[in-house]
Image (tube, rainbow, N blue to C red; front, side, top):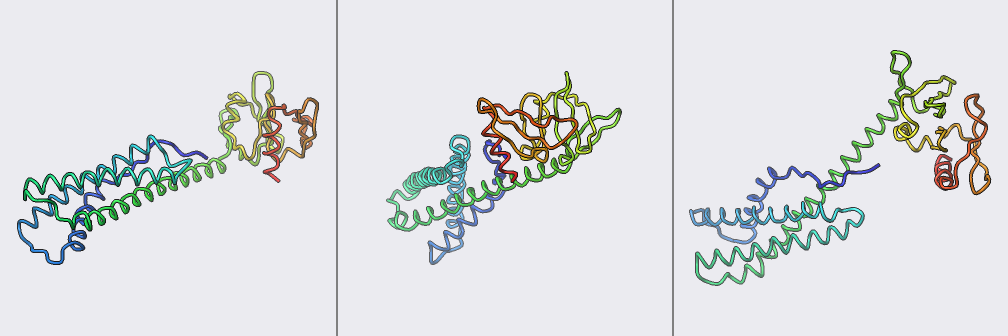
Length: 272
């Protein structure tokens, strides 16, 4: 089961358009003991909210870029550390520079020391929270994709393999397939009740449509269901002779090449 490696689609803009002003309002509550409701407070709040939007967009841009360059797998802790470090440095650098510039333009005085002792600490907490939201969002998307794949595979297991019989398209459950072999120019599907169906696909294409936990490509001629394999024995030149359950359509043993011997043993043991 595989997951697409393309960057996650977060659909986050509407949420943060609402969340950033709420975060800013909470910051005001935590920072100031007395807040006067006047035009100066409204203007300051609007400027701080705009700074919050830009800082969030910096964080978001860094995360999306990292999704393309450094995916979470196979080292999620490394990715998370790099993400938190870069987003906090980038967003905090913008907040400090923009605050210093605005304070110099409006007041022409140094930024209060409380900005560096208290406000920055609060900003960092929120940057961690925003990172946490995106990390959780990423794994939520991954879980949804896994669940989607699981449902698709479950449906595939239930549907089985489609064959043509005259003008009919028949669905053969995977449990009802004994195996497939090559006969002349055609691949032939054999059911457990000994019915034969000619396939209009090569054995290579058929192999890709069959669930690997149930079927194994023995060689160029045969694909067998796990239930048709009773065991195996060592053959010449490190090849394997696979023992096939009695069937008029299949020989009593089928040879597996040396290069596929290890894969076959692993597949066979998983079914035990």
